[in-house]
Image 1 (spheres, one colour):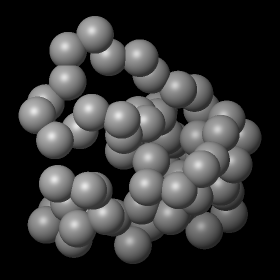
Image 2: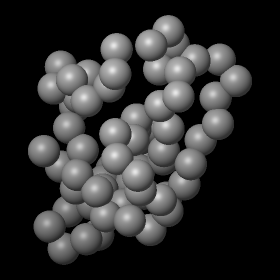
Image 3: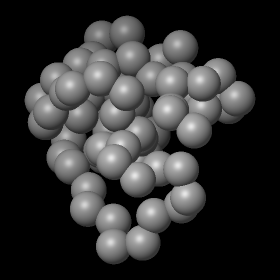
Image 4: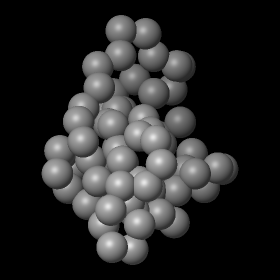
Length: 69
């Protein structure tokens, strides 16, 4: 599990089947001091959050469990 700050929202004109209705967001991973770390990522938002919010994210198979399909 990692920490990131939401930097913006995305709009996709074409979506992968099963991701219809799932919000996409730009996130910036941060270190334990809250400093930016690495490149920004695109994430599926499983809970309501917006730009400026500090969020937790996971990768790999565990991340898919939060999506509806």
